[in-house]
Length: 161
Image 1: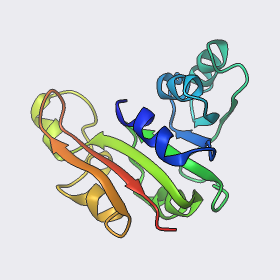
Image 2: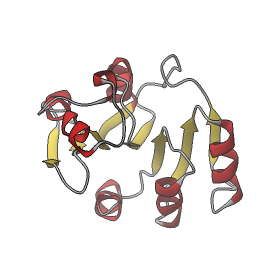
Image 3: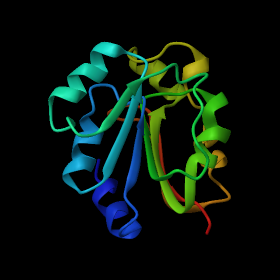
């Protein structure tokens, strides 16, 4: 996650990070090493347990259904979300970022269907420029859609102050 150290410099002393759909905590571990206070959530208890055994012993990690969980407004300086798409959480995700905070979001696009791996349902695949549109009113530090090695869209965006 090449953008994490760059964003870390931008947020300064504001360091509360949420890794949404964190899986086994790969990005959360890097964030902890960079000095973030890490909060992580995933729906899979076994993944949360794995994340807890590594560098994340002191992180606040929990299991929750991401489709219905409540995110506190203006709570986080950075939210990371990778390889997860649930469009209904976008308003709450945007609201949970503090003014001047960031989102790093990356997930699969419909182009992934050509690769024969990853999600198969259109419900879990971004349309072209869809992710860009979600954060179009934020300051975009990075906006990319690529087809290889996987078809993904990635946005690094800063919420207006």
